[in-house]
Length: 250
Length: 324
Ligand SMILES: Nc1ncnc2c1ncn2[C@@H]1O[C@H](COP(=O)(O)OP(=O)(O)OP(=O)(O)O)[C@@H](O)[C@H]1O
Ligand SMILES: [Mg+2]
Image 1 (cartoon, each protein chain N blue to C red):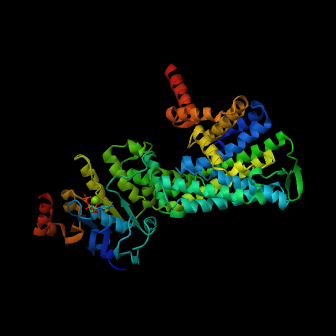
Image 2: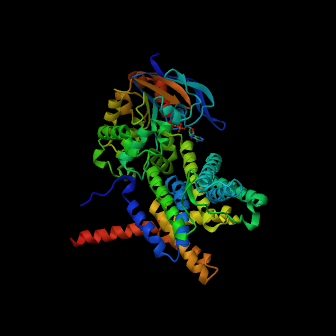
Image 3: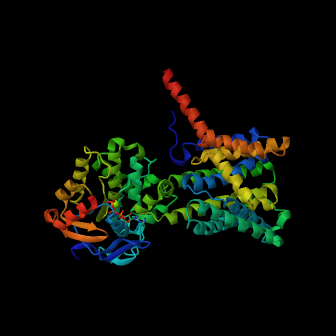
């Protein structure tokens, strides 16, 4: 088995005539935290949509864990070990925290949840996983609260937890700190660093503090293309990266 | 104290048992009581789609009609017994609903609703056109009500109104308990998840189309069972059974009772059948009042009659706690 859990080749995604992802080839080494950064509109989320199956790439292919998953629908990628969180919080707002996590655990088994004759309580493994992850997220005290009633910071943590319930080999997190208050960010940073010990993590993030402190590799995207890739300190020092961010500001 | 039964036999099931026992004496006739249960069954099936799956289907009348026609035709032409006729209706309802679901779930929102409507309309015209079989406008006459028999052994005649009520009540209980099991299953909980947030449900690994289709299959099976029982009740299959108005009727019962609550469906069906019975004797334009009632309900009791009952209970409890 190769050391890379994910490889893309010349990946492109066009919205109409506009190429949001424009020929991206990258490789994610198993067991690392690999961050993707870049100015607003660089195509980071669009890249994630392709990787997770939310959208079909218009060109190129994706190999995950030794198999071509380019045309595999999103739900079918969970069972082989991919899970994602969303930039814009996407939870089951009216359901309890525990039920959110239980459903996410159940999703790992896909169509086996079609069993309409079995009580939910028979799926003990799902309940246990939900409780274990709730503990890890520090949300046990809010187990029975509706997800929509959590604070924004807690909702972001739950958003990451939902992906965790898929017991993925590769965890794709799209701006987990988006909209979070300054007080909550260290909690999230610690959580992600912690997850990086058991999973390969791909992370989109605007917060440079987090990116530089926990990443093994950083890919910088700009206008749909990979601009620079390397270790955090090398990327930080790169002139082109500075120019890209400045270009956005100016 | 005796511990309360848990699971599908606990909760609202004892209340349903009590209602089943009291209904034939509480309403003017056993026939009316039977009609209530039959429509409650159809509303229950609609509720699975609408209340739990968030799927507004106007195909319910089609499934009801398919059950009515197929059970009646099987009894008339193939001379099958009661159990076989019901089984045929259930299988046909499941098959037709699966097909309707398979097509309709390719779209969401308003387009989904329009597809169910269009397919139901096609079913209606098909029944109208096949008048050699369905009787067309005149309806299918002389539908028998065979005795309850298993393996050729006759167990009970269902000719009496009370005997037939008892038979339907047993089936209703089975459907009710079954529906509670379905709601509380991995499948039911996933259906709710899809209603809440389909994109997230797909992202955590569910192929949402499979779940929606199964919801249609189950709903169609139960609705067709209700249709077959209705044909045997009135010994007749009017073309109305398969009309859009039947779908409307079933959907309105479900909403009046309260979506997302199984007991609500019984309440909704009971209310509509009873109100219709009483008002139609006084004033033939009574559906006008029904319209007004529906408007008030949607504006002031968003969770339906059962939602209203629940908030009353909650208020009563709170007052009880405050008094202590
Ligand atoms: N559904 C869509 N249809 C058309 N254009 C889109 C769509 N989604 C994104 N875009 C465009 O594609 C480009 C890349 O968007 P994307 O969301 O991938 O960027 P991003 O790097 O994630 O940005 P941000 O940091 O703001 O989240 C943007 O110019 C955006 O306007
Ligand atoms: Mg983005």
